Image 1 (cartoon, helix red, strand yellow):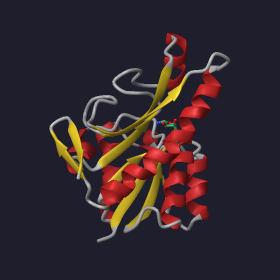
Image 2 (image 1 turned 60 degrees about the horizontal axis):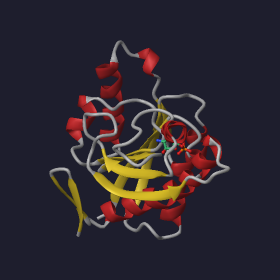
Image 3 (image 1 turned 90 degrees about the vertical axis):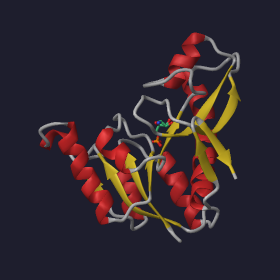
Image 4 (image 1 turned 45 degrees about the vertical axis):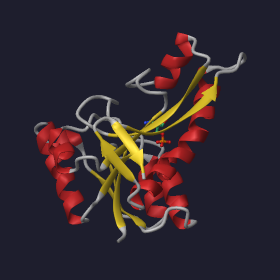
Length: 202
Ligand code: GRF
């Protein structure tokens, strides 16, 4: 059965692109991106979706009274496309109850640090400023906390002596583009089983 994917974005969409490319190349089989939804009207990610013939939807948070109303609108779009899996690919909002309870263990996020360290915004800069010697990225299921859900894959990168926060972020991003599609592939193949906090690769 084809896994029907929705990707939520807010910005440049390079992780979205990595999933599109890995579906097109056949690395990820039996999966299709049905819709890309952005909370930012001019997000380049929307442009990337359109270039590949994927429906691209801007849902403006400012046109809703509150967060639940905004999320209900997103849920409507997800239902219209019969979505099985939601990917957060640089989506800059905390997903609320409305969406999480409708998609338990079916929302996956990519975070640019080795969780549980450096949650939240600007994780690469946080890690760099802290002076860590290794950092990396984490793909995880989304629960109601911020960057707290069960971990699917992590990848380490070294912090080098002449690094800046930007060079470190670029090294991490390269790995994001590998482990994010890898997690999608595993999900689509039915190979991820969540047992409490532990994700077992079957
Ligand atoms: C990535 O660093 C991702 O880990 C974080 O937001 C950034 C999004 O980049 N959640 P892009 O929009 O996928 O290029």
